[in-house]
Image (cartoon, rainbow, N blue to C red; front, side):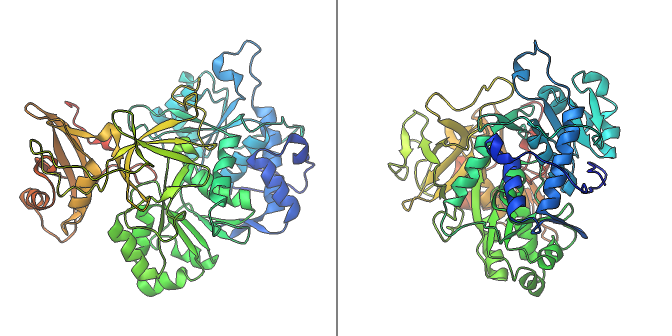
Length: 546
């Protein structure tokens, strides 16, 4: 049999492969080789009715790497700036073994992986493929049909393969070092068109080393992880799949959570580590209590990230399951985890925890001075300004600025926007720290609303709105106002069976927020636009006139 990509996986009968130790062993594909040698018959992946052992996965990855060595053209001798890096291979597949084999095959072949959301429209695909200069796209037939409408606009895309050919090829794959580019991950584009974050092999591995330094261990070789998060996203790709390979654990691939939020698969494979997002935690906490308790009987760690987890949802999950939800924070550019409540032990409600070992984190005020770790103070009331006595911010907020081996190398293709000369990188996120050292995320700097010169953090207003029983979900943003510069507008999805009016919500906000933070308009919508991992895409809500 031969390895196929895009239409179902098959494992080669045999494969002669290069010794990873000779190549330095610095990539995730090298790690795979060592795990396969040490535990060949241990299950690596479960998917539907199929199981792939580590030796089978390793052989399939080598077959795909050989195919890619034939399919991917070598860069021309006079190649420009982007092509000083290895050729790029885009992967637009769901959470199936095909994605895993393709991704690790790209890395083993010494190429650069460009994971892409298979649900992208043709224009969205065109942007990522053109910007990255990908020469090969590994995809299933629906994506191939979609991209066919724009292939003439992609001169660098010399071949589109549903399944790379397996004939010929070599096992003498190029050795790659830690600083070599491994992955281009395109951000969600909250501030314009998506940009490619350049993640090196070093950055991917460093984040696992940082998480490994947490005591007690988060993941070990005997664990089984739920891989239900999209693998084309940094969270699912490195915190999920990467952790499975790094530790030689077992992954349970889920490409459709179904009506039971994946509980049947969790129970079937006795999952021990749940890696999720708030919508998954909410679904589990809202399911039948006995069903959830039975399904999660083997689970020992539950982590949640990618978007804010409302404390009420976390509390409900703990009440139903008897387990705490540990919250983490990070970005695509940080491979991805920066902080976790696992660092401090028991999670504090609403907190994103503390920096991982090996991650340096500062909070920097608008004037460029640090407001933490030296400690912040509660803001003083300004007799000439708004009433801050009821603010949810316990200390001066500042922009999160970080340094660590897990940071990206800048944005494609020239590294712009990366860490400064001293290794520090400003995230664009605002947070504050309490007296115990726990961090609380406030908002994105770009989403800060200025009302008469006073800061309004949308997330604070959204937390107040979410406390109203008539609100299922909300999003807050600033819109121009002729007198105050900006004003607060709320978009609200009403809760089913809970009639509520705009006047009700404005009165609720007035009781819980200083006047300048209160929305001046509420617009009811059937749903909010979300990214693949559940973040609200506020750029799609903003009126064009603004």
